[in-house]
Image (cartoon, rainbow, N blue to C red; front, side, top):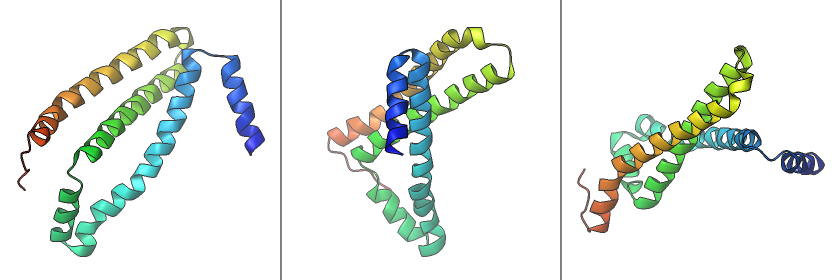
Amino acid sequence: MIRLIKELIKDSFLNPNMGMGSFWIQRITGVLLALYIFPHILIISTAAIYGGNAFTKLINALNNPIVWVLELAMILGVAFHLLNGLRIILVDFFPLSRKQQQMLWLVSIGCFVIFVFSIVTYFPKFVLYAGGYIFVK
């Protein structure tokens, strides 16, 4: 297994281009999103298992800047995984293989737009937190 990983890393550096970076980011975001689903299900299921009060307490405990930054990272990961996945589908099922570079730039621009929108949306939370305001339920 370790030998296989070393070979994959070696092959990646033999062909350094945007497509190879996209390949690795697609795999990494896929694994991270698959790992994220387990705590997400556990958090959401607290309402069904322990009741609404326990869910509210848990959500209030998760209302802090560290979790907000992780949420922003998740949004960026989902955006890239989604848009790059659509690019891969278009290339695989339509004769667009010569347009991969342009499509990858579109994916990058789309991720940037989504991420900027997310930061603008989260910015008031960070400002209120830095100002010392306490969030009311």
